[in-house]
Length: 472
Image 1 (cartoon, one colour):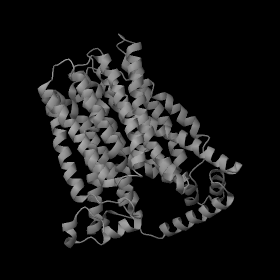
Image 2 (image 1 turned 60 degrees about the vertical axis):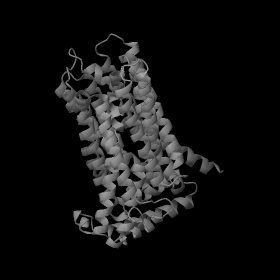
Image 3 (image 1 turned 90 degrees about the horizontal axis):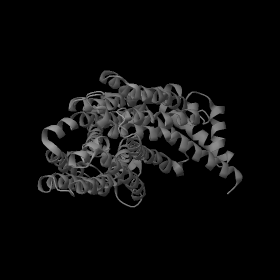
């Protein structure tokens, strides 16, 4: 390998590590409430009811809806790098605001603001990575962000346990848990100051020489950089000549079918109940019989299972068909939740019951993160054609966050009203519906080009209803 190639790879690695701190913050900020919530809910702190707890968790997800909608537009206007730097500032300020919140109302405001940053990062960081990565490394670099998200959640669980044990008896322990979120934001801010802007965005703004300078630093040779610059210019020229995509596209049957499938995938992957565990895992374990400190420590295994599952899932994508992974994942998650529900009725109260619940939660997360999680974003990017990918992804990602918001809001109320068994039984029913939906409607896309997938949808008609679930 030449010295230029080695330097380009090292620079790309630096870009990947620093920019995916946005994903790390995404994971940390969504996971840290898992351990902080029981402490902040105490009467001498924020005095939260079950509904208030759901609001504290879900308000961040409502902010994510707004952040994901506007984050892409702002990064188109001002640049991917610029947007991530601004997001780092919002992450920092909002994290400190949450840790210092004197009342429930202030907590809601700061959590919503934090959600704006999380939602913005969820669309800006993958776009930035995709646009700086060479084609042969794009998949690896973009999926690294997903790995950093679950790593952030795992680290949140670990630091929650450490802080709770180290500061046992301190009623403000939750404030320290939330304050730690500010540290990765500092790393992201100063790190992004050293990184380049997306060459594709630079070309879109007419900054051709700047784009070429960036490409020369992140491509193996100058010839590669010039060739890619020409390709980017040609693509942007074609896109600029096309009419903007609007909701009128939904008047077309095959487009409606794609959006229907995309929304279904978005909703059902979230309605597995995964975020009831990622947001409320500590409370579920405490409900099953663990002490508070033991629940915090045990919950770190959930974070570790997510990291292992995601790493395995990224590897499985190259080996197994998409629908097979999705169906296997739904079978695993539904079975795990069914066993939690049944065991709660049969052995609830036994000394070993908490460990049974923990083992089943780990099984659930291995199935979710190993089979379902990686397929969500990949399937959406594959089934939505290039011309309206921004529009289609925007609609589907909005449903991801809305579904998360609803689950985050109602879960504490469900747990209080129906108990562990009844609550997870609801998710079991949804899991069966997810299996039926996947079997009937989700197409297999592995091994097909994007053009072949689009052609299959275009050729779809009512006579092909007998072969639903297939892209011809």
